Length: 117
Image (cartoon, rainbow, N blue to C red; front, side, top):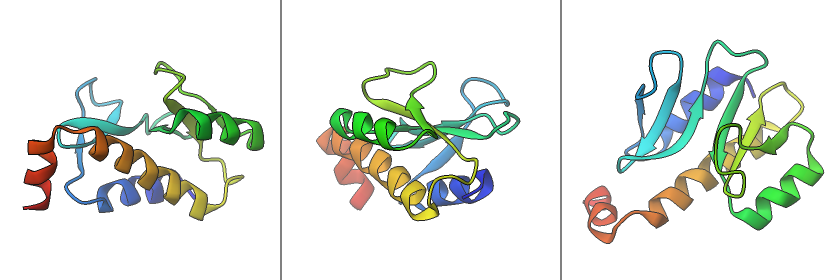
C-alpha cells in the first residue's frame, strides 16, 4: 500500500478529518478531536504513525521490519509503519482501522454518542 492509499483509507473512517496542527508538513488524522494517524507526506520512505494495543504492537514489531516503535510518540501505544510495499495492504488497512477504533473507544461517552447521531 502506498501513502496515498493509506491516507484515503484514513479519510474513509466515519467522521475522520485531516488537520495540520503541526504545520503543513505533517498531516494529522483525527476523530472526535483526537489523533489516530499522522504522516509527513514529503518523507522518504513514507511512514504513518498509528495507535496500537501495546501487546499487539510488540508482536507486530517482532514480525515485521516495516513496523517500529512510534517515532516521536509514546512507544508503548504507537507504531511507525513504513509504507515501502513490504507489508500486505490488508494489514495496513486493518492497522488504520485498529488505530481509529482504539481512539473512538477512548473518547468521552458524549463525544462517542455525538459521532453516531
